[in-house]
Image 1 (cartoon, rainbow, N blue to C red):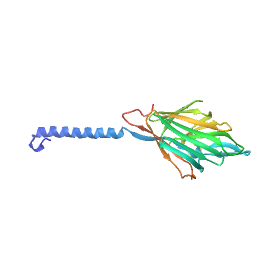
Image 2: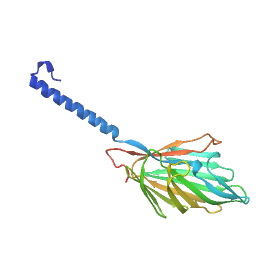
Image 3: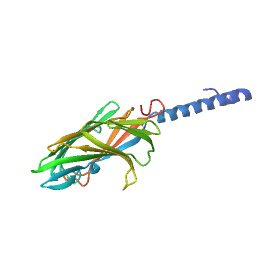
Length: 232
């Protein structure tokens, strides 16, 4: 390193300016590195809101994988997992699988109680309050959500979709995607494909086992930064 004390005034000035420039460059590079990957929570799945309408003994009921009994769970990682829940009248098997920037979420619903048939199921995807939903497009086959950073595509690939509602929940005021499916009376499967266009991460928020004190939750985040696209 140069001895500043032995330099002329002009040399000192040039040296200090150059040294300051290096420091600025180092700070900028460090800032870019820290911004390279930043997870942003994009969607939440709260199983207590994923409700099945059924008929048992001639009476209508609504059940969900909440306040139920966990029969089994197999968690490979936070984005690849399988759970089996037993409610008062149903066995509900939830499966989560990741493939690249795409996540698959499915529910297999089977009545276990005699004289019980299925009618329909609601699946709700919640948009966190801190995320602005700029626009959306909904058709009979897919939903596209546009946020400030990009777009998330949601496609039902199993189950008979009856209708979709996007916007604030009338009770909680939080934006959500509500998908309503018709179910075969003896058992059925509902599955969604969610395409994020960037690396995704999952956080499982699990309630008590084997008896559930509420419902499980799944927080989905997208990792984005300056060195990659946010969403496709």
